[in-house]
Image (cartoon, rainbow, N blue to C red; front, top):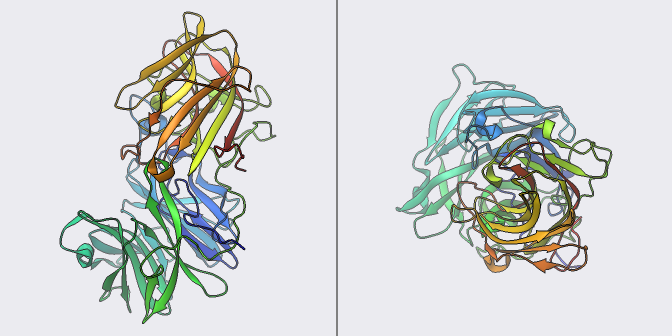
Length: 498
């Protein structure tokens, strides 16, 4: 039987935090400015994951979160969550630069909720630990790693509790010239010892995984480099019911994003030894993969009034201007304000692209657009590209737009008379080629290329892998709307991902 190969998910699932409850694994991840936020993914085998819930619908209603007054929270939102299970309750802790707070969400039902929210002062890249004597800690920081004690119920800072540096200059064990001070803490208590995983980036090197250990929470701590291979780093440890150990980490892989790798772990003299001969193996050693439950095609014909769990809105959605009920079997996006481009468009609905290659396709009814409207399908990041329809002087044009290099360039424009058409984007992430091609069809059979190849680029201002995005925005007057009949995601051989 063929073993599942790394990466276990060839899509943007950064900052993974994973737990096991009996024979079920749960993982949370960073999705920043997308809503609903902080996805909860579930697996029975550590390699086949599906989204089962989110921690919140929206985190706040600031102008940045609503894409108002020229503001946004690209690259911000919720970062680097820590997922834990303790005494029948699930905990997710993360911080938000926009809110300038750390949030603790708690629930007894991780798949259904509801979640209860508590707030703490802002701390960076924290990891939650429930210690044996009813003591609760956050480990966090960059360079100097700090310890902060919480109340027993993890809802507030503990009055008079520990608040101190426990590891000074934690990057030093990786060398004298560091570009990125150690951060991304994951703390575990295993066999009576404390372990903290951190990542750092030596200048001229790669993202590197560190591990510190101590017999007591306050130290003294001793550390070593435990993995330096292909930039695969940042994450934590997980064990299986039969006693095997793994590290779930991620690697930066260009435009598709930061993608998870499962690394086998063995123990030697009380230290976790990652990989095989210091390398992350291609084969995970685990069985066959099930369905890829973090992306999916969608016919928009279910009974739910909300999009499926694979979808996230770009920033906070406005329910007044989208609907799955106004025209059953379609997603309707209505313009409610003027926007300069797709990055400022409200109610843009997105899901991940997937490597090594994939395509996204929509069928769209554009009969109710107004002059100045743009609607269609985007390869979405700061350096975006899209294929869509522009309405101008009461005429319709199918267009390809290149939004890279800080400009919005209409590369090609073709007049059309039909009001229903199909749009498609093909993405190629092999060997970080990172190219997108754009197509349209007037009969759902013959696909015609349009525009030019978009050279996709992972940018830090958006800090997220490319997504397929369904959008509709107005540049002149509001009130127009479009209807999406379906979205279909497949590999470029045509096999649907479901």
